[in-house]
Image 1 (cartoon, one colour):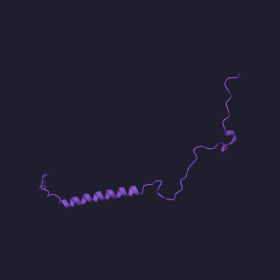
Image 2: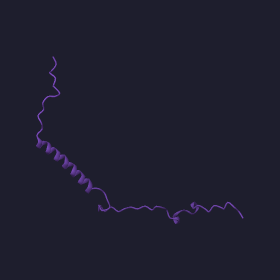
Image 3: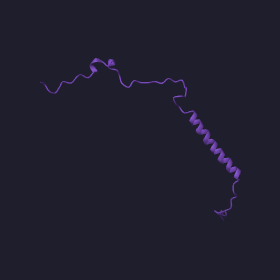
Image 4: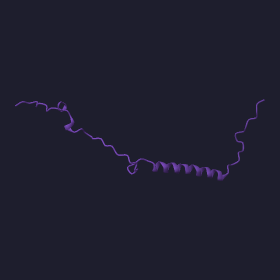
Length: 80
């Protein structure tokens, strides 16, 4: 013989309202603390980490190129 089936609409006592409010307050607190930590620990210009900013040149100056790699002036197409 199989065990008796539970009814889907079986009565469940309601949860205590103070337990629900405590759970909601805990969730809100965790979210607020997480957002505050992300905000305060984000990297930025004012972080004061002491790391120097490394800048790279956008183009190489002409003086540092070898003489044979500079492009020559193309001859004009029309001759007088």
